[in-house]
Length: 96
Image (tube, rainbow, N blue to C red):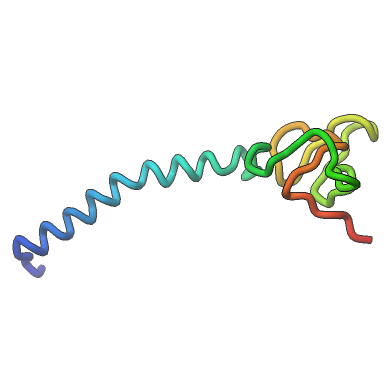
């Protein structure tokens, strides 16, 4: 094993201390970025419960309809109940 001089030891110790200080911040921000199942929060995609012109969740490829056409459904991208008349930045029109 190679012996370290004092300068090398201080540099490596400083890097380890910096990484240990930053790690909790990185992991907490990763946890806040998504929710259970990797879904985005409504606020992170600027979800609103009304359409943006003709663009609305019921016309989105990510929308999973509820029991009836007017019932709330879910989304493959956004967590929580989703209005069929809602809209967010993850909107992707159904092609076809």
